[in-house]
Length: 321
Ligand SMILES: [Zn+2]
Image (cartoon, rainbow, N blue to C red; front, side, top):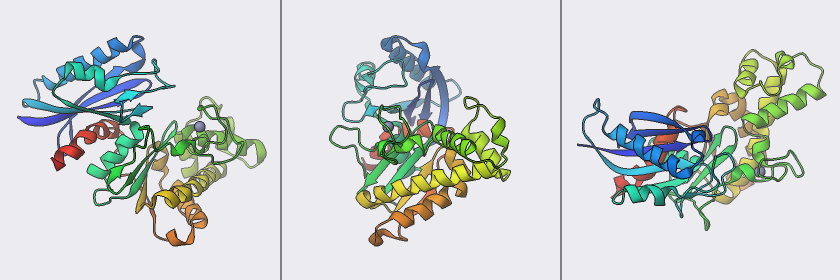
């Protein structure tokens, strides 16, 4: 009987659930609409039903469920709960407690989505031989997972690693957290879009992005324009990388990583964002760290990283046991 872990990736729109084997392969997966469950109990029941259906999938050889690992926004590792979420239908979700009643003998672990990606990078990705590294996830926000001495840093409250909300620009852009100037208001998919529109407003140079509306423009469009040599798009990536690198110099100062891995949609622009980030980080690093810390793309594919990330929370310790 093959041992599997249910890896769960909770997002504001979709919740993806997959059975993952010890090698990190997703054997089978399904999807439920997060926003279709106004009652949190119904949502937990839907997750339970999905796991039951997946484990009984007739196309699979018989499997033994050995754990459930969940990556979710605002998830607290210590309490196993989502706390004060802003992009979900419910503020607080006691995931580990509620699922634990249905699976009393199964190990259930919960952490925020960026931490789950960091653990997956450590178990299956480019950080396999590293004990000290940082993963930055670039999507609708900027997430981070910081690993030191081989352990993910959860912190006193279980919520450590909010690099997206360090102040990049004092009194800068408004952030969803209610404050101003946070790093993710500049370095994220919406952040680079805001930069493009600032450039369009202050420069007269021609650009294919001038015809785009703010609501319709995506980071993918900006990337495509940059590949075509669009100066505004290229400048936006340069500015985004520069601000990221400056913040990473501070992250290096307190965590001394061997490498920093960049994951997510914006990272697909590769050197277009990584090179200015590297140049800027080196410029702002204190001398003892200069030319020592690599900035690299993540090895994880975007599609299944959330599911594999959740599952790796369990497999990481299972391999040690
Ligand atoms: Zn913020």
